[in-house]
Length: 443
Image: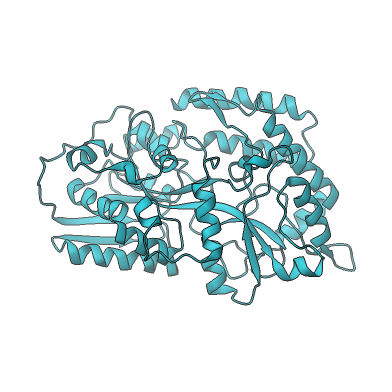
């Protein structure tokens, strides 16, 4: 996706064994020596991030604020850099001092391999209070007692729906259950004279835009892991429930017809996004889509709501999936003190976090920022803040093998939704075995 962003399964520094050896990322790598309290950071640091265009400008404004407050530190900013580019740079003994990743999936890998330095010594030395960071966010920025990342804003996922299309179909409110979602998807779909789809009520294919097993799992409360080295996808019945529902909707709409329709849709992060163009009546997406709609599709009359949930798990409604951007000091940093000063400002300064949240339209990862009167919150954005704050909201667990377990699931689902898998329960149990092998190697 455009910036290889939220929810995309992207390559991380040291993600594969070959890259691991090239980058010199070995388990147990020692972080650089941390200076004594009171040290004054200075010099130049290189900061790489994956954002582009409007969002990159919002980041630059906060970088400018940092340099005005700390004139002894110069920040060279390099936007549009994904984790794969960072991995290649680290493998060559180069790379940035500070790296901003668009996914939490690789935190376990960053921590386990030493690709990013452990920030715990800096946090303890400077007496940084993590209590201001929500618990789920604290969890996805650490792995095996190493905190090699700090949170840089948060994404929550919900349902976007076209109000005009809903009214035309006689639907008064967004679906709250999976059965309602399927029924509404059928009512809202419109065909051309040749039987192909002109408008799809909802695209049920995983792998499309933000449709992924990780984002959909919370709709049934599905668990990924039973512990750090054991998969739960073959034993948790919630996965069978979710995939059975999905396949039922695919069969109703027609796999080939949906696939053909989907192949002609525009890029997710362009002005030709299918929901923005009126080609989808409903779509799962993050809170950041609000800013894209405001910028690229002002005429679309839409609403947002929590994701629909399994019919027998109504208590999950209001929750969802969260992830976020994470930031850290790479193993090759030539100026880790200045890098830490910069990271600390971006992630623990309430005013900076609020300004970033307002500019990028992401959810703040500080409780103090969430309560700030300066935070711009309208009715739509509040839906996502509530999802993020819901105690039943979940995220994908960190793993020493990075996103490998999610990639294995996606590969399985590609076969499943195409009709190649005849035994769902048996297929998921086999998937358990494959994932367990990956987890063992990653650990």
